[in-house]
Image (tube, rainbow, N blue to C red; front, side, top):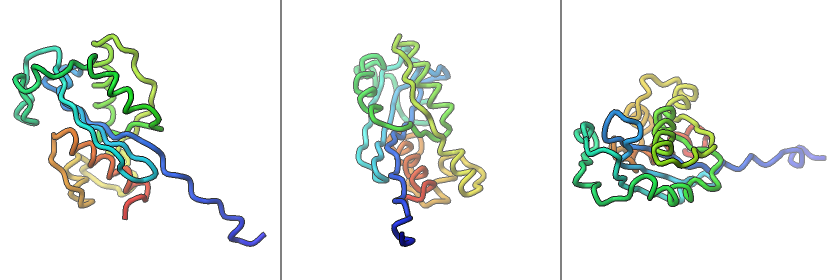
Length: 176
């Protein structure tokens, strides 16, 4: 057997969904925006953004993301939006988020508040990937994006999710 025949093809890049939630208040169940970016075979193949009507009208974090009660009052609740979110999760090997414990806790709290079973899906953290791959510090999303040359409109859920996807792709060697 020649050396070329001994080589195995590289593993296919995983299919994953990058996610970012913005919350209205300190409660993890107060998601008011979610950005989702789907990656298949190392390519971004889908971008989705939803506004969400949280369970309370208080928006102390509006100064960060610009979302107010007036903007989401007629949007679907998390429970009403869930069928679309669940469809986005289907087929993903994992969910990626920058500071994954936060986004995982928002998903969990929103599911619990809506009385929806919590999806059993693995989360990967692009913040931890940046630390372990490039030894980057600090590793807040704007810092990592600046170091990697990734465009970002911070606290815009779709922009944050796309930045996360690009960090994961770069860490996996899928981006030049």
